Amino acid sequence: MTAHTKDYKPLRIILIGYMGAGKTTVGRALSKELNIPFYDLDWYISNRMRKTVKQLFDEKGEDGFRLIERAMLHEVAEFENVIISCGGGTPCFFDNMEYMNEQGETVYLRAETDVLHKHLLMGKSVRPLLLNKTEDEVNQFIAEHLAEREVFYTKAKHILDVSLMDSYDKIHVSVSQLCKLLKLEKVDNQQYNG
Image (tube, rainbow, N blue to C red; front, top):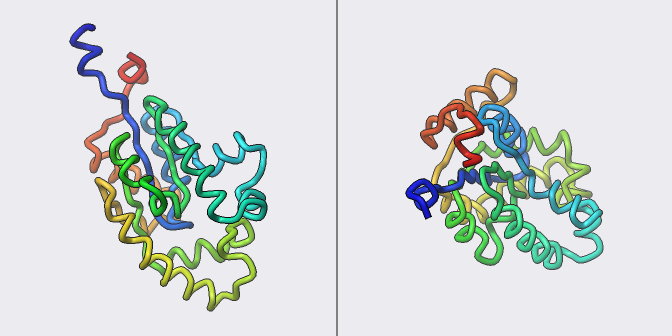
């Protein structure tokens, strides 16, 4: 084993946060910036299971879905040089948060409740936990749910406020802030491929 391989540590950036915080948006933008692959855990689950997250929730219930999610997290978090965005509940079940902290650099994308509400109202039809709720019920649900989940989210190694990501320029600013937070620069992919 050479000194190079002994010191080699793959880059894994794992983005967590509440539904609608912009984990996928930031993950994709960061992937382009760093030139390493991006995986959205929900997308990965859907592709591996050949069913949507909603179908899995409907068929297996939340408990069944969370078991699948945990197994898929363990698959994707073994990849080297990768950016992963997790579902809003991923850090809150089993030992997922501790596992993610062991595997890489975890970042909690924190957003204000009203920002999350605005984002989720735009796409609530694809969010199983928000189906059949009125606007007021969604607002109350977010506030209560976020308070419960913050305990897990704040275990992340890093926290980045992303409340102001309503334009491409602001997304770029968030990605730049994230790179600074993680002490990363745009890299030549050769550096990560060994």
